[in-house]
Length: 201
Image (cartoon, rainbow, N blue to C red; front, side, top):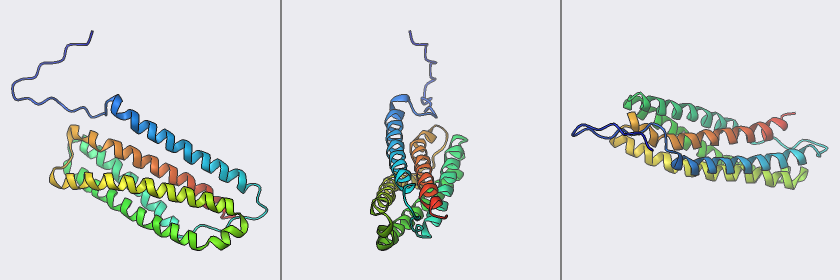
């Protein structure tokens, strides 16, 4: 039997839980798990092919260093936004959310420019390995599409926060996109370390 729920006095609102209920977390966890498997598979394929090459692949465009910094700092800002909302500090939550959203805008812009620069270097990459060049484009392009989706959700949350700051129990509305952006940052960092790191030597 379910435990008896505490009675609410007249006019008292039912508190909103800070954590997402299990049914609402399931699609998010499934999406993150599927994304992790896809990127892990692409990175393993990249490494297997790369280790067979007699020479190194050309280095990625320099702009990816900037985009990597942008998504890492945005993750910190979004985490602080959720933490401030949990403390009922709506003003700080709002500012951190705007900073995090702005940095994701910057990340998407830099990544788009990076994909264009990468495609313009196709002759140098294809001369070494057309397959690895294709894998690099697929990983960068897929991640960019996912980041655009996250940006759309963040933009909506930021607009809502302009009208009413998130605080207290409302932190639960920020948690899903914060978790997804954290996964985006981890996925991109793994891509960056493998593809950029191996080509530095």
